[in-house]
Length: 138
Image (cartoon, rainbow, N blue to C red):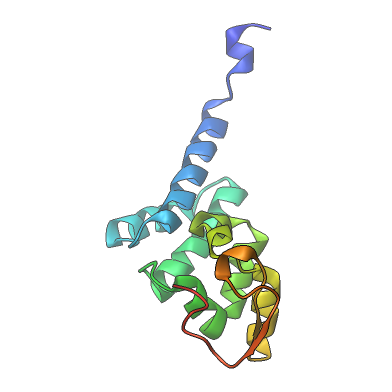
């Protein structure tokens, strides 16, 4: 196989770079106005995957541009948007696994106003806690 055949096309490599940028925006502590403008351009991309991911992150940036407690905010006030993040694997950009909370159970339990904590890092084991807890997400 020659070197040119192994190399992705220009469009494919641009799509990969755009996706990396989109995931990077969610990792930042603040999605700036400049990044919002870039996301608006990416949302109009010819590549449907890039356009879809950019549109979701653009919606997140408009609702909660700062990263602090973003997932908790989305779970409480915009669960459909949090679902889109989960379905597209954009939620991985938030390093969710570091909290030690099982995301699916937590999302489902917030709809019932009951949080189920699982995992060794949160220190609660498999206990059930009623009501909202400020210790859920820091």
